[in-house]
Length: 88
Length: 286
Image 1 (cartoon, rainbow over the protein chains, first blue to last red):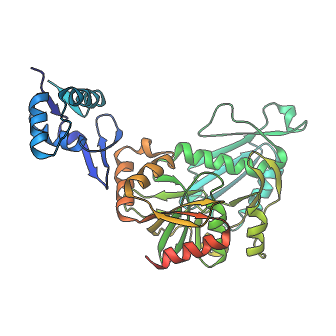
Image 2: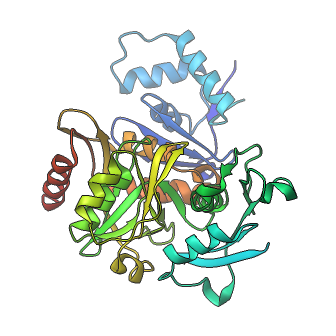
């Protein structure tokens, strides 16, 4: 089972603005401008979770009418490519 | 280089060397009331040179270089030597400035607080800054505003104000006693004329100000205003900054502090009289 974990908090500067959140990734020097649910995903992934466990966690917290494990896995792969999430 | 002058604009010292006498003489006259770089040591060098020795005389064209260079930058005719020097100084700032977060914005100060105006070329940054100066604001600059990451304060860069096309007669009518440079026609941005900032702008150019309002003006539309959210302001100001990426986390912190603490508005205006009323009203409502 593949698990995911957020990049170490020491490498991220997360600044919520209005609808969007800014994330400065210290390791790459890149600024990411993200919408929900990315900040929520990073928050949930302080502990390593599988896609299904993360989906269950997000579904508990938020009203997700179209909860889709495949779509979430694709989002997670994007975050892994950006360096904001590690694949374990 | 044969001909040299040096000057200080805001916190930045420049040394400008040139193969020809005339641009340096014109520049020295326009910047005659500006201070020299601290201890005579400039931050940036600008070189205006002829590509070949004979091109100093035959069809003279001015190439721009310096500490920081854009390869293949198009040369300008000798009659536009002052413009070449201004472009050279702007280029050093855009490519080499690391001390301050550089925003492509005009700025004016009143009561120790700074108004920033940014937008695409033709939006009216320079024109509105010049007209605010005519109405008693302290001009801080028409091209670059410098954010100090250590304090969040805005430092001015009051170089010659670059007026283009229809802005030239409008500002001349508002400031009939001001000093202007020569009219330059056929520049890459059309007709261009430099305006010398007033004595107050020069005397106070080292004094920073607290940012109080960010405006995104657009010229040529029905009068309209809308608030701009911090996230949109952040994106637009990163686009308006040449050194945001180079400053790394210092730039991120400076810019996020700015957009979280300073209100921003987009204003559309059909004429400068309307714009002045919009600016004064938004300012007094702060």
